[in-house]
Amino acid sequence: MRADTLCERAMTQAQTKATEASVDEYLASRASHEQLVDCKALMAMFERVTKHSAKMWGPGIVGYGSYRYTYASGRTGESCLAGLAIRGRDLVVYLVAAGPHHEALLATLGRHRLGKACLYFRRLADLDERVLEQLVAEAVAELGRRHDAQGGV
Image (cartoon, rainbow, N blue to C red; front, top):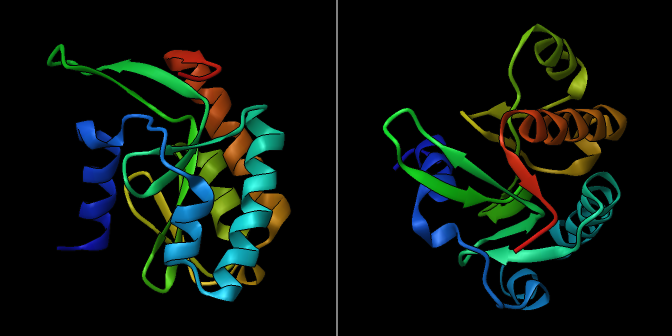
């Protein structure tokens, strides 16, 4: 299965509900030493941007805050405002990046791949962290405008 398909599925299926699972245990079970250092830096950024603590969403997403959504079909759900995951050698940041301004930011971000709602990269050092933080902050603000964004579940 393609990585962007996995990303879409992870963010839309019921398995992405907030859980009481341990973020530290997830990271210890999946992250290499380098990934763990990068995840800790990303987690500090997400806390700063969202003003929420880390919580596991499903078995493999470290998420922050929450929002409720409704599709045109009437299907509703809840997801984290921002999140991260470890997918093999890649780190994944979950965010909504749409519009020309985001495209311009993405062009200056550094070495990455973009799926529908997933930003894939190998190392945080490959990215401009200020640009990444701006992307995350704008994505969180956009979700707040579009949906019923909340502090947590």
